[in-house]
Image 1 (cartoon, protein in one colour):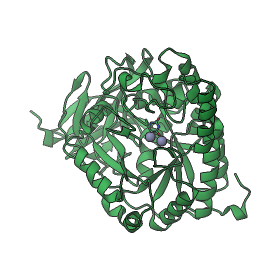
Image 2: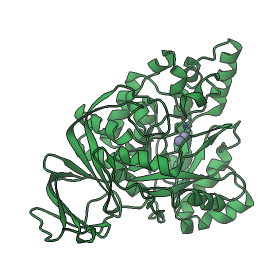
Image 3: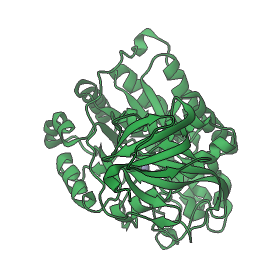
Image 4: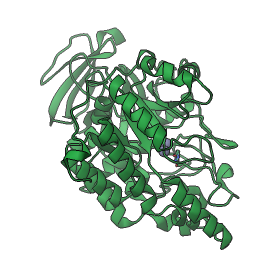
Length: 471
Ligand code: DUC
Ligand code: ZN
Ligand code: ZN
């Protein structure tokens, strides 16, 4: 009888990576990939026949909000329940935030690790959200690498929540990050425009779900993206725009990249699949997230941006608020966010079926490009000898319909209720453990590890705007 230490041989599958697509056997041993090839043999290993299935490097969700406070509300999950749901949906690692709430970001990292260690069933990493430049923060900035943080996040809005970075703070952090080797990521919305619009709408008595899209039209995102790209180019700091939702945003990033700027974008399944029509539904308030979902034209521009490399990664922006937490408030007060850590990979795979992405590009945006962005490639995001044995097996013929009742996130609704999919992750291997197998949670042990993200290589010289036309 084979023992787990004797290894696991996945035989006869179609291995799809960011740069290859073809038949391959994969031998897993000791939590890592030991060999990849054709006609592999491993006398004592357990053998699994994966003919007809697609094997991909483990998807990484670079944007989740687990147990996350939003005014009086809090997302309903824990590291345990959220990573279980992630695994059910074919994700093998998540990246969450350590948010500077008082003085110290290092304390926030330690507190977040205390929540996750011994609870997460999957590996996880943390990025650091800077909310205030204090003396403590200044002194900690050079040491965040030692705590495993390589990507920072700034909110260009949420002024009234006291976490907004104004232009001065943005400029300071972009310059410090360039010198210290961090990538800066931003939530790009202009607060002054949407707060002005909110006041007008409130005065007119327009506060239902549709007011959400009305107070944050595309200019709210586009102006902020335009401004932060300008600042980051002048500071020569690598920049990631989080959750891009507009065609205008894609266009700004594309043009800046064409001029040599080190800027890229993330989008999320909600912006690829949903449109502002949802705000007309009686339960339209459920769909309130920021930025808002947009039009069909925006949706298609985002798919195009993902396909042509303008946008590099897809995160879920998972924020699991149950119905009860969202009902009853004005559009401006509803806790923002949608559940999505479980549905990100299936929905992106559906993008292959629908002709938006090649199979390799799908793998790149859900896995490999995330690993590269966080400095984790080829430990993560790859199927190479020595890589962590994080693998997901997709059955391209598996038919599933998305229903909140059969999904595993800590919520009683799904933005994609009833949506039929062909092709679904059926087996999830994380660190060599078979975590999900068909209908079974095969290994719910909280064995997820904190994965420190290394300092990135020095920035490519990004041209100054003084030397080239503005984007
Ligand atoms: N927007 C959301 O919709 N949810 C989480 C955080 C955010 O900025
Ligand atoms: Zn955000
Ligand atoms: Zn978010």
